[in-house]
Length: 162
Image (cartoon, rainbow, N blue to C red):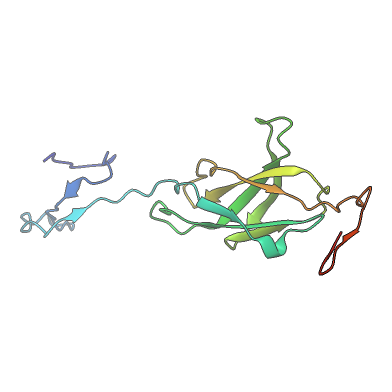
């Protein structure tokens, strides 16, 4: 165990700390107190990336895509917000911020183009900083099917097949 008598106290996450204290006034200093019971230093870190991003089918349409996620470790401090980013897959390494202040663990992107594959990822933020991006979820916005061509009908004694 190191003896730290003055600042800066360079302590690491998980270090064990005990203290002895002296009282000081204009007359002088007391003897050291008995050793305290000790404590373990906890240094908060950035959160882990969200995981298990999953499409919410009921929220996906021609121009919207909905998905949710689950938190992992918050790094020891509450997660204050999430940043949602997307790419259309044309430029895989080019991500655009869709919304930077999401406070719930789901999101619906609106105003999307029909029939495109969108990839979405999420970044968690706590007071220490930002997580790495999550693994993306890929969502295909719905498309209106084209009209059937060359429709034929066949009938027999019991059935009609179109």
